[in-house]
Image (tube, rainbow over all chains, first blue to last red; front, side, top):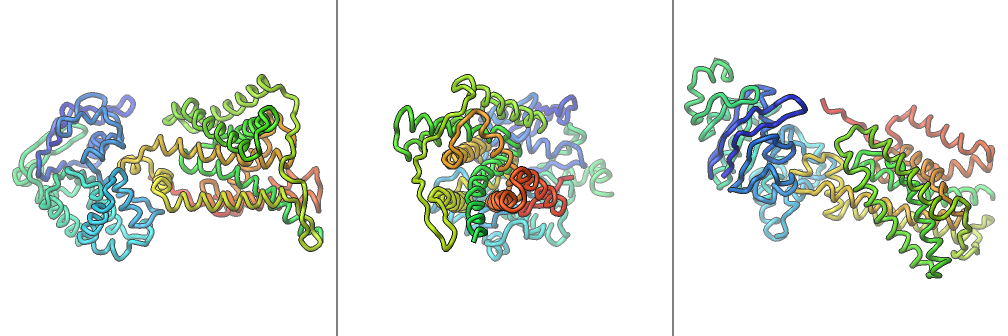
Amino acid sequence: MLKVTDLKVKYGMIEAIKGISFEVRDGEIVTMIGANGAGKTTTMHAISGLVKAAEGSIKLDDVELTKTPANKIVGMGLAQVPEGRRVFAEQTVEENLILGAYLRKDKAKMAEDMEEVYKLFPRLKERRKQLAGTLSGGEQQMLAMGRALMAKPSILLLDEPSMGLSPLLVSEIFHIIREINDKGTTILLVEQNAKRALAIADRAYVLETGSITLEGTGEELANDERVQKAYLGG
Amino acid sequence: MQFLSYLINGLGLGSVYAIIALGYTMVYGIAKMLNFAHGDIIMIGAYIAFFALTKFALPFPLAVLAAIAVCTMLGVLIERLAYKPLRQAPSLAVLITAIGVSYFLQNGAQILWSSSSKVFPSVISTGSISLGSASVSYLTLLTIATCIVVMICLTLFINRTKTGSAMRACSEDKGASMLMGINVNMIISITFAIGSGLAAIASVLLASTYPSVYPTMGSMPGIKAFTAAVFGGIGSIPGAFIGGLLLGIIEIFAKAYISTQLSDAIVFGVLIVILLIKPTGLLGKKINVKV
């Protein structure tokens, strides 16, 4: 479904991503783990078109994304929940969700999908007239996820969804990621919380300073000595 | 009761400032730049309305429409040619470019239409009505009414429409807006179009009040309106409205009760005091610097 080949991203003279290749197949949960500054967010931004790839290709079902403007990519079925949520703080929960469906024309279906999102995150429904900026961190994460789901993506990119959340909320968020995947959405998950991420992933990649150093199934990597030492505190 | 007529005249002048300030504040809110050529769009609008009324003898509403159409297109064109290539450039480069565009428009007008001023025909009835002891001209009432209508329409547009919601989203976070599928360049163009269209409306009101049209006529109202936008909190639409009205009232009162010569100094003095007390302006939001 999503195939990244020899991707390089540069910020000025600095090469942040040094030629990585990976893929996400239909229906999978794939996770990319790595430390701060490894290039996880840069990779996500390159896929969504927010930063330009210097070299390499990113293909979504055979369409080349590196040449597609960022605002067209979501219409092709790829939505991203960005790092730090980035909800529109001065708009209401409902307005945020409607913005998530910005390119869609099927009004009736949108209303149904909004109900689906509210079913997944009942707390958003309670707060739908509230400004997004007044929500707690966990609620904002839910809103960012709901907003991305409103685009009806076939693949959802999640960038550090557990960042800054209490352990209880992290469990809830991971539970919901599982649920979204069970309903048929492919998932690419970037996480610092390696333990949780590897536990739900079908396959996983380890990103270190711009290069992929390890790959395997979630279970393989969770049991890998190097991964345990570097990311699982063991 | 002189006070009442000063107050209403102040509101009239302030309404013009408010309409111009809306253009500054919207462009700042969304494109994060100070478009110092905004005042000169007013000048172009005044010339277009002038020629439409005199040379082509068009009726007044059509002349206004012509000015709006030309200014809207000009605003979009300026953004595309001068500012868009600098989207990633430091804000100082954009600011200097805007000043350059301003001089370009002024000098262009001088070449095309000479630097001598033209007398704007008085098309709006010169009559007045009396409110108690104060007499208020129709023009002043029309100006205030126009400002209120503009404000209501703009507020509804920004808060109730899909494009308005996208504009608010862009002003908060362009990257996240792109992730939603919003065409940020298009939104910026729309913002310039609206701001310049409003400048055209202001130009007709201004030229009817002070009926001389010349290449640098936009500078002073432009700077005053910019001040009004900062006064109210730049980036805030209600702020531009309130800032504009207050500035007009302060200016007229300063002229009436203190000194005509000092009125501009007093206006800017008040701005400095306000910014010392509240650096983001009356309705400005705290700017959160992301770490």
